[in-house]
Image (cartoon, rainbow, N blue to C red):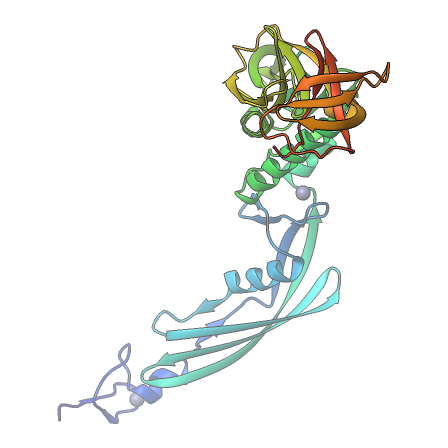
Length: 350
Ligand SMILES: [Zn+2]
Ligand SMILES: [Zn+2]
């Protein structure tokens, strides 16, 4: 077997490690090292972590403490199969004591080392939170509805969608996905949003979920640090009609099911399905909302006719039974008075 002599101790050794025998090499060897004091910079308001001057959304403070320790831990480059256990202990909200254990394989031996450090928590205000508190915004989202005032539940849905979109974008690292402030007005609401990109995503999501359309317009707001500052206004128009609106268009009475770019509904008179585009329904008018419909007694069903009481005169009126009409005689059904006379409105789910 080939062997050489260790230049340090003079013993024979089959192999040299960085110019020494194994024993001499290990004499001054440190598997892992860490500074005795570390600092973790976090945002006092949102809990983001600052790493190399960048704010990043993180888990809770303990996650940040563990990651700060792992980031600062040096493990010798020739170690293999390294396993690290970090055990943080909160002493005060500003100070953590961290115990670290490192296991690794080195020169075919298992090494174990324990280290301790303390992590001081430095709280500041992150870029996002200082922008929010400073009233920063890049885009204004104006939510309105076409030819009407948006309903309260519609506005709530729009705000929920906006919050969902922003949470998703924040989790992907977008630090401008925030609303600085919002203004409720009679015709809708104005939201002041951190970036136009975020605002555009919100508009797209609202339009795809509740219909309507939006456009953008840019205006110069002034100059700051030698640069022109633009604000972008997004004008979002919710659709003219909502699900369960009963509308009149070119002699037809239609209950809207979905009103987006494409419109689906039911012809109230015949019960037939209606499919069209919002352009085709240009000029349609709202007659009633389903929840406001009068109810009246369905006296009898005779072949393809319904006998109902006129809700105002209590006279018996015969009307054609729409297809898929399932109500039973002796029950109350919603009806609507139109230019075509009294119409029975079929069950919601049909
Ligand atoms: Zn030696
Ligand atoms: Zn923050």
